[in-house]
Length: 250
Image 1 (cartoon, rainbow, N blue to C red):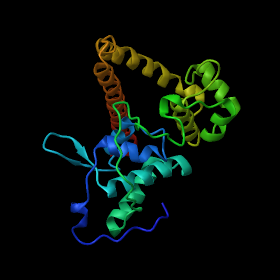
Image 2 (cartoon, helix red, strand yellow):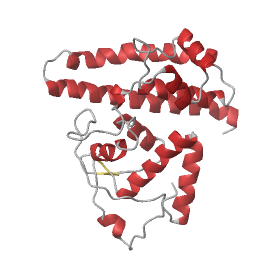
Image 3 (cartoon, rainbow, N blue to C red):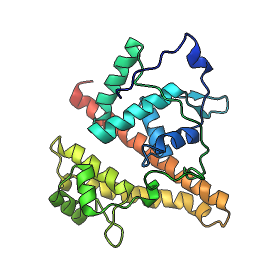
Image 4 (tube, rainbow, N blue to C red):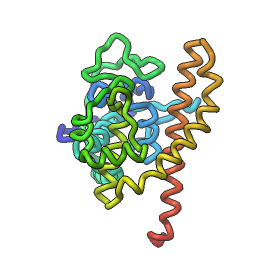
């Protein structure tokens, strides 16, 4: 966030090489290994980044887009800033013509599940993250008693023999953020119930692809699941915003 913005000649932004969403994921996962394609799409849906689109509808990102994403991910990971505050800071940069920083590392290829072939990440990939209880508590900001209650309610379920993955860290961090506003674990049981309903529905949609032995079909199943999850996040956020309009007087 504190990197000086590189000076860009007029019109240079248009001449910047553009990247696919997979290439952007490869760039970001070096420093943010928990990042997923669904996460990038969610941040786009929240208006934090606006990649260009090809005639066929494919996303194309500039280096300025990557710089914005780096700032957003850093603000979430290191400062636990809500998206509302991050959006306001980006709007200030936009209005002043500044940028949160720009870096130009080499492009890398990314596999169908977001992996970077031939490269060892500094941290395990998302599906391989394993945290103990103490690590989860330290990194998420919740305390041990909250973790016990989340497990009792089924909001957090450790993998045998008691490890927590990247999604568990996301859940715990979100709970810590909600707790700052006064929400307690007992208020979150409905989230688990609603998620279980969606899992059952989405599983029916991807099951035909999962049952196929073709690796390409399985890759499509994984991408379909990520897309469904991202769309679900967008739908949920929009429904909450609509529901709060009367309370906010809008």
